[in-house]
Image (cartoon, rainbow, N blue to C red; front, side, top):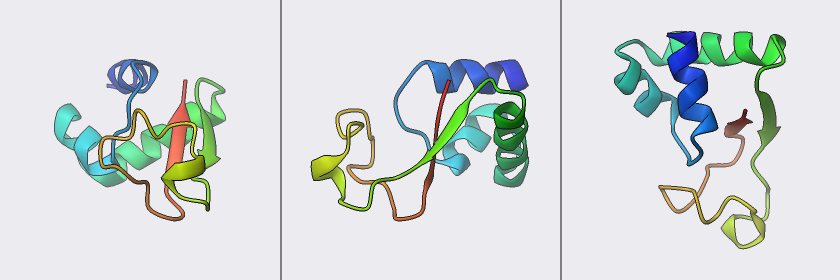
Length: 77
């Protein structure tokens, strides 16, 4: 399941924890724990969403919802 999650992150785009949980057939809490494990392992990196909104965000072209909520965690592989 960790490999599948890592593949999803590396495929690009923007996914909410709930959407990832649905794709993986598990809970958002387990997905969050797996994301933190992958970060500790050095396989992904976390960064915070910009406070300026989508106008200044380098990910605005890949964000499926059109915006990323303040304080949302973003991951890249």
